[in-house]
Structures are given as structure tokens and as C-alpha cells.
Image 1 (cartoon, helix red, strand yellow):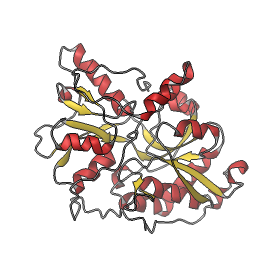
Image 2 (cartoon, helix red, strand yellow):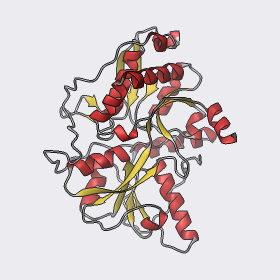
Image 3 (cartoon, helix red, strand yellow):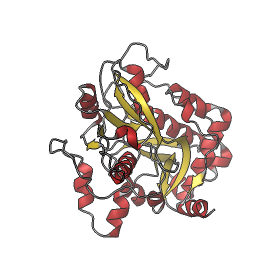
Image 4 (cartoon, one colour):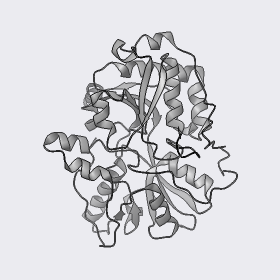
Length: 347
């Protein structure tokens, strides 16, 4: 997979919102090849995003009852001795599975109505994994730019935060797949167009997260458009999801490209937005969302076994259905490393 861009993309108008992500200042302090690799880690989530408010409808149009309260009554699972036996001794010694999440976007990982408790589908999956491994879930909120270094240092044992697999991440981390990885284009309800490829964004104003897989896709599409003499999309960058959605709902931009579960949620709970397109996060190839662990520490195989156990007993599907994500279920979890990616690329 082509690494995420490390340059500042050109803007077509001076009025385009400036990048205000704290991540940029952080990455600029890094030097040498390591900085390039780490910057490419930014990906499928919306860095710095916050759960956007808005005119939520009383009954979501997709029929899903979204519980946004801190009292979640999560779906739980029984310990799987075979999966638990795979946990490295050094990691299981304290009886906890320390999981990081960014609390960035409904319904994946976000703050409940008390503005404190972290809830969402990513947290529910992490809870199932901890249960299967016989460990207590120790949930830690972090920022998108901080999880890579803290996972490498051992401060976090796993990351459940809509992280998509790519070759650059695999140089530093191992993965346990657990969900499909799609991005969605959203627009105002009054929009009369759909997005199926590069031609459909030509000349339009599109919001996207800085340093993400979404941005990588749009930059590639813009390059294709320009090579064919067509107007590229004008990319807009905002500091938060709330700012992005305000710009979209007020028609200052035409489109937003974000994790598909989030745009589906907004389409179901607001009366002014709709989904107008869908693209795999690994475009032009395909990728998956995965639990992310330090490369070579042995935890990925245990998490993979735990996810497969949850798939087998039905608790995994119940969690996804609870958040309206049933169509993103995988039939089997797999451990993915740089070696398995290289083997796949060579086959």
C-alpha cells in the first residue's frame, strides 16, 4: 500500500481553513526516516475529531437504538482458556489488558452524555477480547498522534480505534483484524450527486482529516484528475469533527470523507445529511480495521484467537449489530504482520 503523504498538499484558495491539528507540530519535531514512517501511521480515524452534535432525530432512520449514556450494559463474553493461554506472560502478569482509544467519533469511540465515559463499538469489541483472555479491560483515552509511540513504548498493549492496516504501520506493529474498513462521502440531503470515483469530486470542496488514509485517497484522485486536464477537488481541513459538520451543513463545503460508520450514524440521526458514496480505506486495494499491538510481542495471536472465539459464540455480531455495523463484520479474524503482508504481495 502506498504510504500516507507526508507533504503539505496544495490549496486552491487562500480561504481554505488552515490545519490546526496538534499532530502537525508533533510530527515536525521528529527528524530523519523514522519521522516519515511515523507520519505515515496516521490513518483511518479522524485525528482530533470530537463527536459532532446536531439535530438528532428521536428515532434513527436505520432503526438502531444508539445508547449514548454512560450506563452501557455491555455485551460480555466468557473466558476462552485456549485464547487466554496465548497471552504473553509479561503482558498478562498484572491481570489487565491496557487498551488505548481516541474517543473520536460516534459510533466507534466517543464520550458518553456525561462527557467523561468512553463508549462505542470499539470499546465493546475491546471488552469482548479482554473477557475472552480472562483480563480486566484497562481503557485509556489518547490522541491519534500519540498512540503509535506509546504502543511502541509498552504504555498501551493494544489499540482499538478504527486503525486500518497498511504497510508502513506493519513495520512497527502487528494486527488482529476485526472489521471491514470503509470510508464514506457525506453531503447535504439536498445534494443531487453521488461519488463513485475521482470524476465525481472534480471541482468540489471536500473536507478530510490531515494525514489520514482518506486524504491519501483524495490526493491520488486529484492527481488523476489533473493528469486528465480536469479540475481537482479543493481539500479543506478542520480542527474537529464538529467544525467539519458545521461547514458541511452550512454549505461551505460540498462533501466530507470520513469513516463510514460515522457518516452512516449522522445520516440516521440527522435530517440534513446523507451518504453519497463509499470507498475502501485501502483504495486502490482493500484493507481491514484491526487491533494494533507492538510488533513481535506475541499479543496479536492471543487477540486474534479471542476475536474468533467471540465470532463463534455470537457475541461479536451482537456488538456490531448494537451499533448498526453488522454489514462490516468479518467471518474470521487473522493476525497480520509485515511478513504476512509481504507474502500476500508476492503471491
